[in-house]
Image (tube, rainbow, N blue to C red):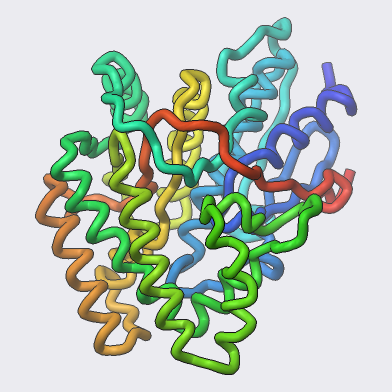
Amino acid sequence: MGIIKDDLLKIIDCARLAPSADNCQPWFFEVENNIIYLCHDVENTAANHLYNIDFFADYVSLGAVLENIHIQAHHLGYSPKISLLEKVRPLAQIEIIKTHEPYFSPLLGAIANRKTNRRRYSKKKISENIQTEIKSMARENNLNIHWIDDPQMIKKFAKIISIHDYILWEDRALRENLVRMLRFEKKFHPEGLSIDSLELGIKKHAFGPSIKLANYVKLIWKMLGIGSVRHTGKTVRNSAAIALLTSPGKHHAHTYIDGGRIFQKIWLNLTGKNMALQPIFGTLSLILNHRLGRGGLSAKHEKIQKEITAFFHENFLNFKNETPIALFRVGYAKEPSAISGRKEIKKILKKI
């Protein structure tokens, strides 16, 4: 029995709700009969820059897309056969086969409710049961979760994570990419980041004018960097836990795609438990850049990168031999002030 067109659209509608760095949504789909082709939208995604080395962040997002497809397809009574390809277009082939009656997946409802929450979290400790469940999800898929919930260690991690913001605002390519993705107008945006989602409080009113003025007064970029470091430090300190998801696989697209599927599964599980989560990809990018010896940084920024890498290698057992998939903070918090929009299906479905 073939796939019903309405079901196909439901599957793709669910797929497009996956997370992505700066909400760039680096994907589109092509469909032929009962096969969905997932393609990496290289032309419209963030550049292959320091914070997206070899598109690793994109691949983690594309893995989340595949996990959403898997969950929705099973919910509708189909078994998706997912094959990763050694291509960009298409990147993966998903054959949708009708095999069983529809059944409810407990993670399905969490897909629409999942969101990045950049608020400060409650420091209420996360139960051992939840920690065990999350670690089991990783272990069952040959991944590992490094978990930090000691308040003093969280403070140390907050300090080291926050200093990467100096690079974000002082490196021209990085800040231009960030500014390109920011949305200041009070209206729906199908992509990019609403300024409200950054949880800057009253500082958001000065943020836009400061960025415009910084193009003429370069010292303002440095001031924005200092302010960003302080804000990130306070935000990360107010977390119940910091977690690092890693893989034994090598630095390869498939490693990040497979890891992205499990990261999404973990995120959905936590969402279903009314917990908040914020990915922190900039820090991992610096670590990867150092490991791969790509360079491209000033002497000052090289020093920051080396300090961050050394700290993570010292504080996460065996991390030197693992590939980082996702670094994230977890806790309990109020709903975020704004959520990211999504492109319409007609914009990402190229062929049907």
